[in-house]
Amino acid sequence: MKERVTVVSPASSANLGAGYDTFALALRKPTDTLTLQRSGGGVRLLVEGLEINAPPGKNVVSGIVRAVMNGEGISEGVSLRLQKGVPVGAGLGSSAASSAAAAVGMNALFDLGLEEQKLIEYAGVGERIASGTAHYDNVSAAIVGGFVIVSEAHRCVRVRAPPQLALCLVTPRVPLPSRKTEYARSLVPENLSLDEVVAAVTSASRLVYGFSRGDLGEIGKAMQGGFVDPRRSIMIPGFEKVRESALKAGAFGTCISGAGPTVLAATDKRKAPSVLKAMIRGFRGVRVPSEGFVTGVGEGCRIIEQI
Image (cartoon, rainbow, N blue to C red):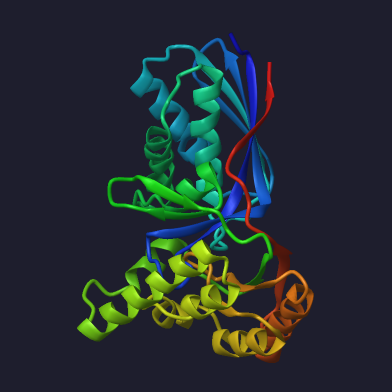
């Protein structure tokens, strides 16, 4: 019987321009680290690292742990320590990283033997707590890693990303609504024209083809499509300028990472430093401070300790 388990869970980027609520990509960094330990009773949570806004009783980790306890008939208590490394509200799947860690950690701590789909469903509870909607793209990427395609039935298909793919992510410091994800979702129309539907299907198909063939150019061109970014870009001053700067510096394509405001650029490892500098310079050109980093495609949740 295990007494303590520690899980590392990755950040993620959803949508990738073409795949609203369908595509997501696990990132190599940043990460959350969650330690779960059996205790006498109840659920206790300690959060370290980056600040989060949710009170302990409404944190996604606590919510998922309670959901698993109720769903799987666990009466024993759990003590939790979350080392928060994925920034909140940046469009990097912060709640999904913590949610995935909680689901995977509970499965390991109590030897539940839950299947992948069930883990994704439990992790979706955290997304409902965080944003009011249980969407499964980010949590799927955080659990299984790589590039994922998520269906309405909460099943996902993982496609191995090309190893030469580098990702530049830049987050502008701009004022955002208090419930940013809900606001960002409200910007997406419920109905589209036939032309927009055809264009979206074309871009999504090209993106899947690009990942399956390891074609960075095709991935980048497909990321430029979709119906979401043109609506959400109003949240990001200088978005078009940053996109233009990234492309001139050698990016294959750019998009908004999840609900934003982080902007993602796809390139190769050799060009990544120049692309990152160009994106930050683009924001500076419209007097918007920003910060960014270069990373690659990451694996899913990893258990790094079991005692």
